Length: 137
Image (cartoon, rainbow, N blue to C red; front, side, top):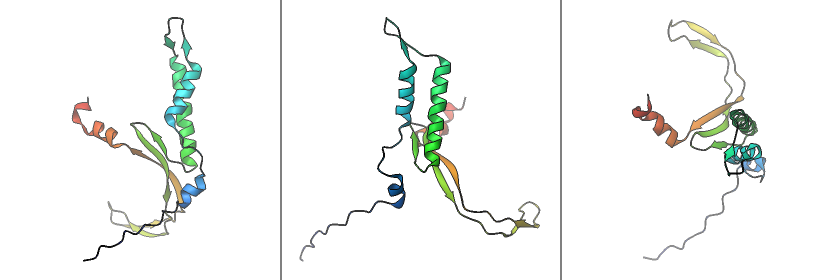
């Protein structure tokens, strides 16, 4: 039996979303936090690094705000160990009639336009920590 020749598959085309985002570098939550903390850190003569709690809190709040802005613009933001933040497309819903599951009576359902909502998904490691009953104390 004759062997088939290996044919090359054409390269995948980039998605429309990737093209819309451009070729800019990805958002790095760790780099933003690290950069903010290095600006505010005081190093003593003995080499100790001192940070105020208020400064750390402000840096983390600013990093999360920037992450939310990036996610709102369409970029997926990954926060190490915790998860990822992204925007989700919500489909439109037509107006019509529905049934209240508790009473069984018919209810008028209003139309809902298409929209975008934030979505957070936890990493597998975080899910495993929360699923372990030893950590429920």
